[in-house]
Length: 121
Image (cartoon, rainbow, N blue to C red):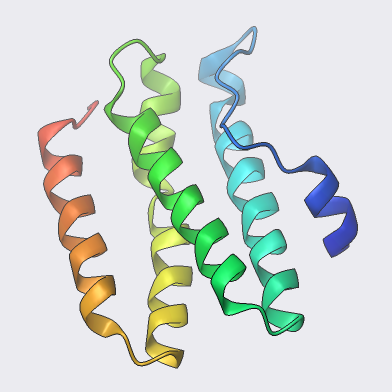
């Protein structure tokens, strides 16, 4: 997927409206994360670490927010929990390159606590 196309397709929020959430949830969450990571990759290529971090953190927080929201269908919440590692690994790579592992450890701890607290399983 080209980065211009990814930026055009990127939405600030994960869309949780589909006719069959049990069937479409994995694809819905994976597509949102993939698009966001491609936008972040574009900013990495442009040597713009501020926007790269912004898109990675926004994606991470959006996935966590949907995972913790009890009004979202359980299938989507489960997929958010199962695919949370994708933006978290991208943030780990970003913070390792920029020598800021303390910031990553804070995000990792937050994700660990919230995933146990709001586990949809």
